[in-house]
Amino acid sequence: MTTRVEVDLGERSYPIFIGPDVGVEQNLISSTVQSDTIVIISNDIVAPLYLSRIRDQFNSRNCLELILPDGEAHKTLGSFERIMTFMLEHRVDRSATIVALGGGVIGDLAGFAAASYQRGIAFAQIPTTLLAQVDSAVGGKTAVNHPLGKNMIGAFYQPCAVFADTRTLATLPDRELSAGLAEVIKYGLIRDREFLKWIDINLDDLLKRDDDALTFAVQRSCENKAVVVHEDEREQGNRAILNLGHTFGHAIETAQGYGNWLHGEAVGAGTCMALRMSHRLGWLDEVDMKWGIDLLKRANLPTRAPRDMGTDDFMQLMARDKKNIGGKIRLVLLTDIGAAVVTGDYDAGALSATLAEERARS
Image (cartoon, rainbow, N blue to C red; front, side, top):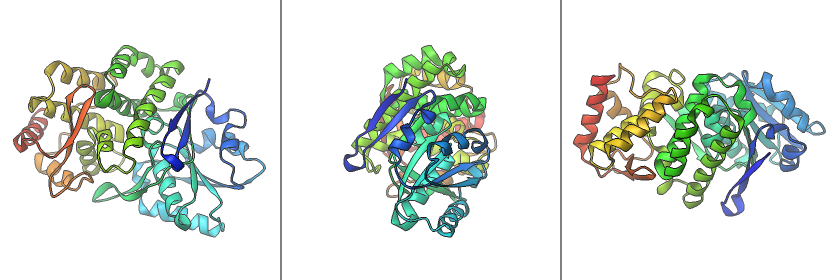
């Protein structure tokens, strides 16, 4: 059974279709994506598994395919240029639609390419990882990485539709599944205590890849994100709560080299740091702090930063974060489970102590 969630953005609104085999459901993709020319962008891990099934949806159309190397290390301006060159060589016009088939890296690259090619063409997302289905494929953030910072070059550009086929999660490595659960848990922590209770009860089923549990987790996560994106599409205010743990996490990813820590792993450790700092400030009680950390640990995620990262490493990299204003490092912190704030107005000593504690305990 397919579930539909709407992202309400006026003329840029679009549906998210969620469920087992939604990607191959009769006519769903082809009836939604109606361009005569389709450019499928995938990677060398996902393409052998799912590309032929998606191609068959467009069997009467001009269907082009570009396969990129897998991994965060390839989310670069070089890969972006490769997509641009491919499109130009094949004389793709602005009536075409790019279809992103893969995880967050492919979705971000393809979306940024769609936003840029001839000043913007349509694109659709077919996310094949849990992290992409619950987070990166929804909301219109597209970007590439730079050696000096993650996702610093990109655009806000919404897809025309998202097709989250939960059956693709059956082939996902355990480590990637856990990485996605970091973002699922995030939604409970920042705005949905009841969902966090549900995750607590059903986490074992999620780890076992139960179809019903995964479908509900994706649906509830997307519903939460859709509300936040509706209220603040371009992250001028409250949308930044979606970045719980990300300021610490992006510093970890950049310092360790993109791809050595998965995004969700870095977010898991970063979220634990945010929970500890929220408690240190007296904003979050100890029971709730431990609840969040325990869930992330049960999801097989790191709960501490890498051993080789010190306070100076974090401070230098966090100073480049996109949320910063006026030189202040702004963080997403919790005042309660389900209540997040984005602020640079905190005791700086609490941040220093949190980073020092991390170094001592890692």
